[in-house]
Image (tube, rainbow, N blue to C red; front, side):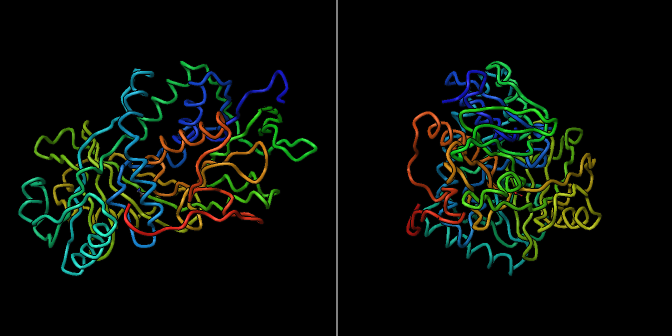
Length: 391
Ligand code: GLY
């Protein structure tokens, strides 16, 4: 039983994941409080927003790819509903994704990935360099191969987040702009609320931990409910093509340039996001000269016309990594505590599916067994589902 003054649910973290969960729960009429010192200023702020279930799929990540493919299907309805309720755009752009190889070594790498993706039954095809140039005339002279993923689209994470905040306001979700510093627990061990850094307590029937890589810190004292997230720093650039009518990119363009991965995400308003580094580093938010150099070097190897564009922003934030690159979404080993973090490179893509799963768990009491079950970690882990075969 929750006390009379208690929220039904307290959500720690108000990035895209936490905000989407708070929104979905509030739609069911639940009293939700969201706790975050700077909503949307974590990984959400840097994210490029690729819905790249196919183009980010990689060796050893079969379960994750399956999850991402399912999640991508939820995006159009999620965006339509959020846009209708908030009156704001999500920047969803159904543009497909081209991935190119710079040299023959990169082409071999791309073909290995193509074989893997075909084996998994994913929607991807090899296209000729001529066809790639036809769809993307800005490609540079040195392109050795290309593949096309017709259903890998994009949304704009900052627009999505603004829409979610507007929807939370409509649903009267209280946002507490403080840092969560601890969990309150009943004598029987159940989690009963959240303490913030002002000393205030926020009692709740259920607490959802959606604080990105920092989620681990809030369960340090609960080894049975370990949340082994870590920061994986990403540096991202933003350029502006709006004043350059000849610079037109109609698709996400990814590439391998002498084995290094690079992507360009073109928004409808002319913003071009170039990313990203992937560094096992703390979340220091420092943009380094070396990273800016490397990103621009590889991006302009694919699209030389970038040279002409104003560089308007360089951002560093950390993704929430997990030990197996899979997210942690579901009940923890501690009553009253639900986990929704560890989304690593796929936070925007997975947000609608994660919000749906957490909402089902809290409202119905259970969700189907999943490879994302947070109880695979911790002192007494529950086995996850086996993997293999087509997706
Ligand atoms: N999903 C792209 C990135 O994390 O850089």
